[in-house]
Amino acid sequence: MRILRWALLGAVAVLVSCGGGSSPTSNEAGEKAAYKVGDTGPGGGVIFYVNEAGFGNSDTEKTSIGSLCPTETCRYLEMALSDLPGQHPWEEAMAVAEAFSTPSATDWVLPSRDALNVMCKYAFGDTVNDVCNNDGAGSLSLKDKGFSPSNYWSSSHYFEDVAWTQDFLDGVQDGSRKVPEEAYYVRPVRAF
Image (cartoon, rainbow, N blue to C red; front, side, top):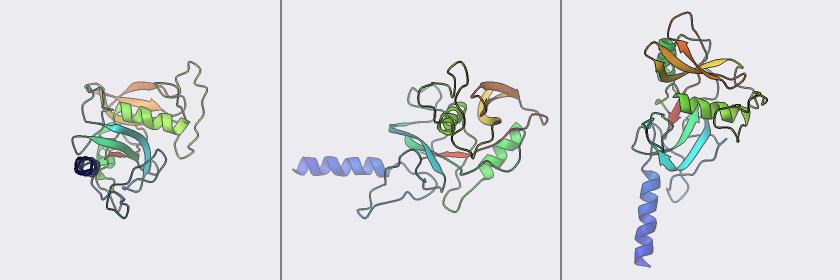
């Protein structure tokens, strides 16, 4: 019984240790709440990715989606409730995403290529394709009407002067030049 109690306390400590820039919702016992896709997150956005095993920061890790995790392991990705106003060139997109804040979170960033793809899959309700809406016909339509059927920037580099984008009309991922003439939508994310 004593071993079981210590094991449970250790599990609670592990669950509580992954924090973002804000306080997670807690139940009466003080344990960190578990979130599901579609829930409101602690930053006031929407949870669009859950990985109970956890993920880190490296694109090369099998457990990573390449998103900024402020701790060694995160379990959730949360997106802002809406796009930031206007369209932005890449460098400006990086800056406005990092400047975005809510009353409960200040650690928002531009999503990585993989995080943007998961966000696109959430927006389309795509649960079967690895790449958003990539069934060969682009036959899915946006389920979440809060997204623009257009290109969104990611923080991931395609080449030195090119970054990955994703089109929320058909799900296509492609590279776009990091020049002022190339302006796309921005939806900040945070990991915790």
